[in-house]
Length: 332
Image 1 (tube, rainbow, N blue to C red):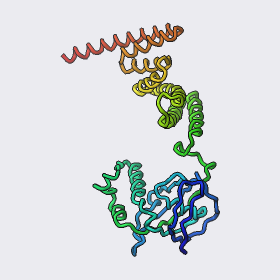
Image 2 (cartoon, helix red, strand yellow; image 1 turned 90 degrees about the vertical axis):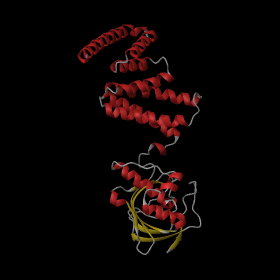
Image 3 (cartoon, helix red, strand yellow; image 1 turned 180 degrees about the vertical axis):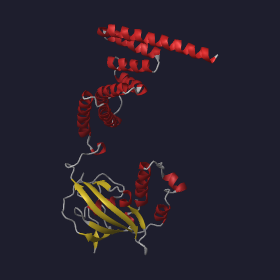
Image 4 (cartoon, rainbow, N blue to C red; image 1 turned 135 degrees about the vertical axis):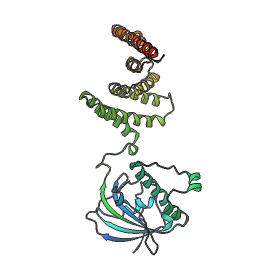
């Protein structure tokens, strides 16, 4: 039968009006689950042209990776958000969609295909408006579909339907308050992992938290109170991350992240000391000396420790000079 396109719930930002879809049930679902904003639907799909040959365009099963769609997050192909809401769990159905509803499909398909190529070691090709005019999408069948739009048939198999409370949201799905709470949890996870000497897990937790804070900082004006508050949250994460990197002997990363710490807090003793250790490890003797001396000035209780570091640095530099002279002698 021919049925009007189901509208999304009123609290969603958009609806599709005066559009038609033909639905044919292939296999009845096992359970009806109410949909709402934030519901994640996982499904396999097959896309065909509505021509005499029913030409196959895409089939998710060939790549062994189903599609995941979070409702209400402005997915580029709105019709998919609507048709999955006409289905039950484990249902299989075919939807013939008017060409007016699937104009964005070539670009959605290109994005999915490019992502699959990346996972296989290929390169992803950027496609802005100018690039498309000159080179197309990079896929002949999608270019043909864009130039000659037509109705498409989607065969959808619903694999799972999860409410927002049933799955872990990704960072981009979270509100700002939820992101702040996640940062706190990630910092604690990193601390626990560090205490158990699981440096990789600690480093990953700190790195994830830093990325979330950077997203939040982009929304604020630099040096405004909100931005400063976020910067203060970022400093201990950068210090912890740099410590993991220092133990992993990734010295240039330590220098980079401790330098960022010192932009926010110029008198941060931990940042200066760890950067000094990293500079010493890569033979940046003058920079290391400056950092250790600054630590001693800021915290007199560390004077003895810094004198030892400076003495060690002097010995290291003398040894390096001797080695260099020996190399030059052999060369000449």
